Length: 183
View 1: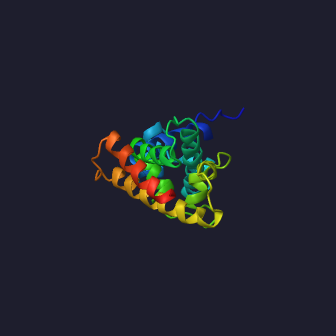
View 2: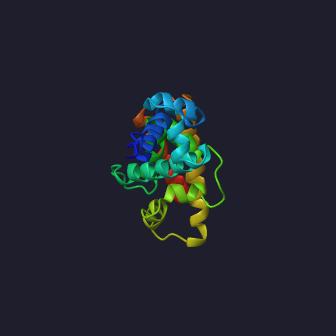
View 3: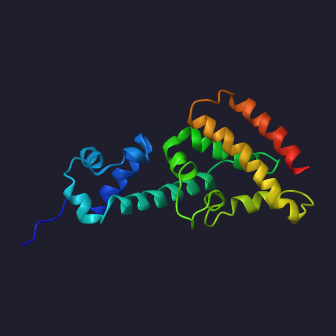
């Protein structure tokens, strides 16, 4: 009778994702993962053909995690894009390693930052654009780009510990700048 395998794909995937969240993608090695979940490296390479395959799976898990984070983020502001920006910045603050993987690292050409930000089903960006009264669709891309560059800059500063404004100061800044962008 064959021995039952105790280390499953689910165990490896969940362990890898927790390690990624705690230490970052650059620290997700076979040896570290094996030590983290308490096994040898053999089950990792039995289940994944390479660490690149595991990395691809982690990217998908991280993007799904981000989309769920956005779906569950509270929306309270009447100014378009403010809540989206706050969500993005909060994600960078709460999950800096996932943020860096998704929004500060190179990935394949099929995955754009816009697609990640907009979400598979959520249409987060499209929903915000629709909230702008009398929007000239020829100007929609320009508005989005200005908002994105601004909120991405703040989020990157947050992940590096270079942004020290309070939540209220951040909210007021976003409201002021985004109002200028959309008027």
